[in-house]
Image (tube, rainbow, N blue to C red; front, side, top):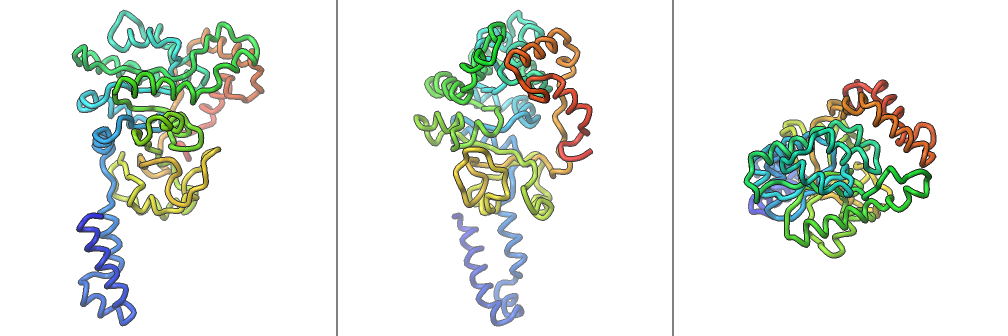
Length: 352
C-alpha cells in the first residue's frame, strides 16, 4: 500500500466514525464527503494506456498473454518499443508443422503470402483460416522485421499441433492432434523459456489462464510466476451498465490490473466463467489484468477474411475435412457456418 492510499484509508475511517455524529461534523473534519473520498480512491486505481501497460509488464515478466484476435495487439507490434523488449509472438493460429516456412517468410525470405497462408489456414481450427486478424498479423510482423537488424528480428511461433490434413480421412485421424494445450505448452517451454526469450502470446483466453488445465497452467508447473495474463472486457455478466459507468474516462484501449483495484474486488460471478476453472470469489479467475476496448455496446465484431471466402479451392478442402471427420451440420468445420454468421451479424459484436 502506498503512502497516498494509507492516507486515504485513515481519512475514510475517520470520516465514517464522524458520520454517525452528523454529516456536518464529517465535512468539517475531512474537508470532503464519503462520495468524494471513494471517487478519489478510484482515481488512484485509474486504468493505464494499453501499450504502455503491456510494455511495462515485459519489464517484470517473460511472457505477456493476451486474448486474441484483437487489433490492440497489431498496434502494439507496430510500436518500435515492442521489438526492443520482445523476441517472439506465439500464436494459436499457426500449424507448427510449417515453422520453417513461417520463419523464412517472417524474416523477409522469398516466400509469398499465398504460400505462407497454409500456416494459419491448415490448423486444427477452421476459424483461424477465416480470421481477418491473422490475415494481417503475419504480413505486419514481416514488414516490421524489414526495419530491424538481423539479431533483433521478431519470430512468430506456430503453436497448433503439426497436423497434415492430407492424411486425415476419418475422425480417428484427427485424434492425435486434439491435445492442443499440451502442444502450446511444449512450444513455449522449448522456444521461449529454455532460450531465455520474451514472448507475447496471442490465444483464446481459455489457453492463457493460470488454472483449469490451460497451456499456461501446464508450463507454469515448471516455470511459475513468469506470465502475465490479460483478459479482454466484453461486458460484465450482470449490472453491466452500472459497472461500465465506472470506466467512463478510461483510455481506449487501456488496462487495469485485478490486484488491488475495484475490478479485483468484484465477485467473480461478474466475469465469464470457463469450463474447468476452480471456484473463485473475487476477480476474473486465472487472469491478472483486464483490457478495456470500450463499452460492450460499441465493441466491433471481427470480420471474416475476404481472401479466404474467395478461395474456392480452400473452401472445397474445408468441406472435405468436415466430411472426413464427420462434423455434424452447423459444426465449426463447415465453411457455411462462417458464411451464415457473416450474413446474419451486424458490424458490432453485441448489436447492430
